[in-house]
Length: 312
Length: 284
Image 1: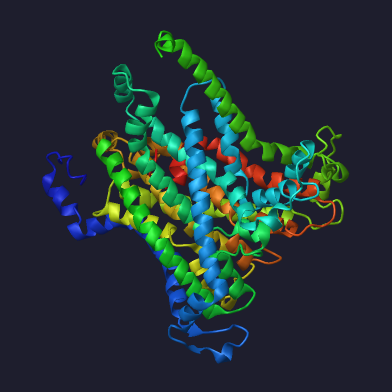
Image 2: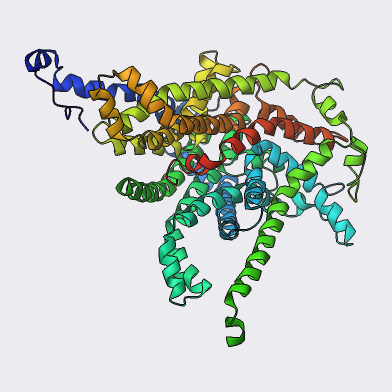
């Protein structure tokens, strides 16, 4: 696609005289890209480098004069501190539970929505809605309006059937946070999987059906293998977003009752405890975790992407 | 077995209707919390806090009046205006930066354009919390704390990768032959961009803008840490409701609903392109 495909007509001498050098042309092609690239490096990469540097210092912002190089002490402290270790575990648990549950629910909903039935568009809209509630608002809704032990909707409905009146958040704090997140993220998984279902080869499925394959056989041997990469993509993108989750933990439990995940701990250790060095070390650990997930995510995205490009 | 197999079409039709019903039930179940939130926002505080719930209580706008500061509480307007400024301005910046970049990645691609595309994506996978502290220290030392324009810059960087990916895929849909034809006819670059590329890519660009708007409007962590009284955004305003304050359910519901309304509107408007945006362009 190098623009030269249109052969210049007759006026060759003038044209060559005005043609810029190849190097200049290469830069002209690159130029539109540069502002975005420079901006991204400045705003996202530089702060991370700074975090990396700070993570090697013993630095409490209340005692700025006592700042000194501490080597890997912060990492040692983060990895041995019981609270911080617990928050690593909480992060893993929270992410895995929410991703798995919303993926399974999303798959069920996507399979249901892939069929033709009356009001399919309406149901789709109803299902997307939870994802479009501002995350803090959604967390407030679950905390006060649904979970409240005295006048929340859950206990109100249990009242009708004479059931118990549990204090949801105090009894099962992590599960309470997870349930609200599953509610918000299931639509996301559903949308990705629905897109996957709709990109199936329908002729192949028809052919299998004509050959007498049952619904289950078609699902097991045609649909599921096709969906594999969409499932992977949903799981990985979901993980990337939920590992970073701050809103739900902050709102529903304020990090209490053992629900503090790593982003909340990082926030707390520098915003409330002013431990800059420790916060940075914890931040670097979050990044390392994310890079591990992201490496796989990028691979999946790139395989889907190459398929798109080759199909086009 | 054979008795059933005689009329397979009948059976599958009945099963289809049954599964449609299940889909409806699940759809209503997922929507129920939102419907209940909407209903509660129109109840009086007394009716909102009953057990068992009062489904048929009389309706009132008191929750909304209370939210907008009628009861002497803080007015949400500054926060709503801040959120609007942060979301709209950052979305505009994103478009200004992403459009040329997407052009250089699709219509006249640079060498190794896929590598550049994946660099943008990889920045999105770096957790925001990792750069939070240096950004806070930077803002503090340059007097940018509690300044809405700092959020505008950060939201621009947060959404730029998504926008570049989405727009790259939209611009790639513009047929090269049309552009070549216009060039042969003597059209110059601005004309090609406005008359040939824009009409084809515009719906995609609009969807991209809506999705960037949603992400900026929703953001809490940066806003919470980097703003205070002046530049407080709507989600930060909502965090004021985290601890219970007597009877306030109707007010919480009204607040949550009003603040979610722009996102719901933008999300439904961009419904068809939503997946593409959320999956960073990997799924169409």
